Length: 428
Image 1 (spheres, rainbow, N blue to C red):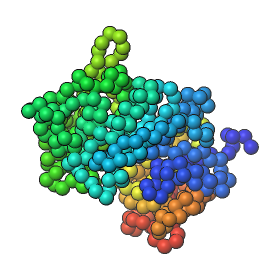
Image 2 (spheres, helix red, strand yellow; image 1 turned 60 degrees about the horizontal axis):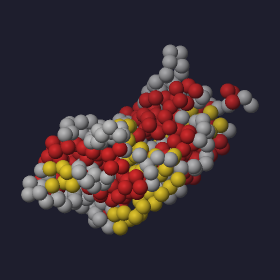
Image 3 (tube, rainbow, N blue to C red; image 1 turned 120 degrees about the vertical axis):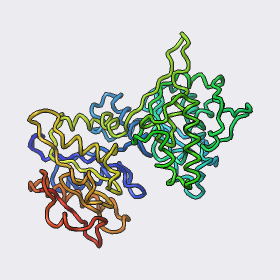
Image 4 (cartoon, rainbow, N blue to C red; image 1 turned 45 degrees about the vertical axis):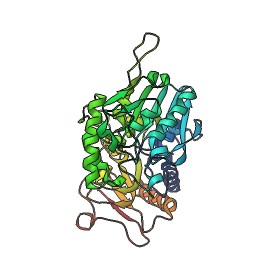
């Protein structure tokens, strides 16, 4: 059959945290679409959180190898490197960075400084990104001069101070003594000494990948409670970050610089500090995770019409109000439902989640949604079946289009599907 006559489905979910990686979810969805007789392409996605580094590195490595759209290649080609370091509260941990090409490093801040590793003993005031800095030292020692750091999932609110001290910076109080690690100590920061900064960090090109627009001044209030911060600690950390921003020359209202406990603030302080004539200065670029990965995998080109597509399947563990702005689902729905050129048709998007809030913006803008039934122990089987049914529905011509929610969708409550049958609602 000619490819133009095949019913083509792109399966591009985020991870289902705790139950399925983005890759596992994409492959399960693709299997379900194929069960329904469709041509399916699996493109696992992420928005800057844990797991983004591996997906980005593999996509960039495939593109560097000349394989065309990275999504079309199933083989992993980026090299993984493990580094002994410490977690956010100073305990030994092994963290990983990825090498998609010579001179290039990609890592998740959460690999060393993530919240899951310290869930048993969170320390909102003292948590530090020092361990991530040690991982970056390993990248630099291996020859990397281009560092991409994905910022989601951190346990820290230290403004990247720990990270840059691992690279040789010194943060001093008014008495000239170095401050202890952790965000709370930054309230006493009086001087930033970069004389001992690793020369390789001075020359590095930095890319920070994030999924939020939160500025530093709001980071403790927005993210501190999930890191174990009490109301008093939120106030303390807010004051400390304001002082740190002043010292680093960063506007505390800068959108996105509150990501990962304001880690971009510290990196901004060292990016571009070396202007000697024998090499270019360091640089800092901020990227949103979903569109960056979509470009790397070729998904963006697909949505722009390079490949005829009949249906997009995407999803994540919980589809709610937070799934819209800056997240994978929100970005995909916005791009797919906004034709790239006059006369082009929008692509219907069906969402699949472990939990679905039916009045969420991203759900209302989609062609339909499915909430997986009951416990998530059989997530991959459930994803496969939900994808099969959504594909069959779309092939019959009932899953596309826009309008009011069908059936009892508008009048029933939001929440999880119960029992053994998935709850699916479409827009017709």
